[in-house]
Amino acid sequence: GWVVLAVVVGAFAQYLYGLATFLAPCAPPSLRQFSLSTHVVVGLAIYVASAAAIVSGIAEKAAWTHCGYYNKKGDSYVLDGADRNPAEHYHLFPDGCKFINGAALAALATTVSTLLAVASLKTGAESDVLAGKKRDDLDLPSPASTSQLHMPAPPIV
Image (cartoon, rainbow, N blue to C red; front, side, top):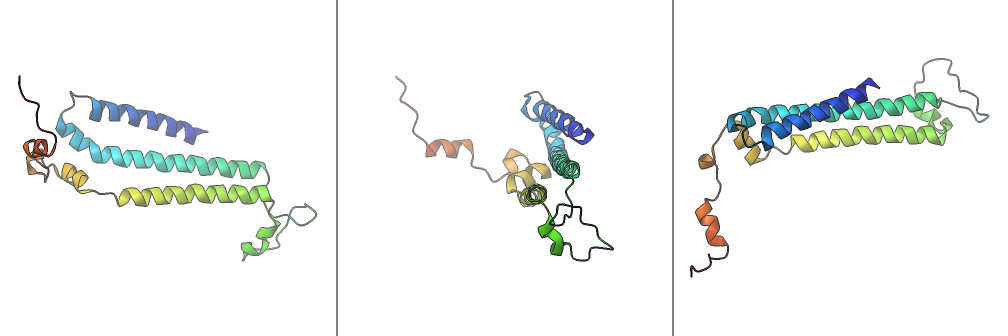
């Protein structure tokens, strides 16, 4: 539906923007620095929207397959009032509906786990880039010291 279309268009736009901003050699470093946090936030928003598209598709499938409470005869299970303990009647669900519920929960759990993992990945390098530090200000080895760690230059003949 419309959610999936929005996710595909947004992901494609994000991809093109990332190519133009971070891969193009003509993009100034100030633009890359400014765009990094926005690019990450928009990417996460597209990821969450894709999870919403997955769950809404699963919910639509559940609705079309008439997932609900059924008694042992296969008739629809009718509640007289509020179902205060739905777990008590969960065994009445068909196996396909239980699978659909599990798939939706797995999609939600994966999304939440990914968001938590990304939130905990604030590495020092990313923080330095976001803070606007230049290469000279960072705690990186100089090119001269790294060349001494590798093989010596071949002799000039």
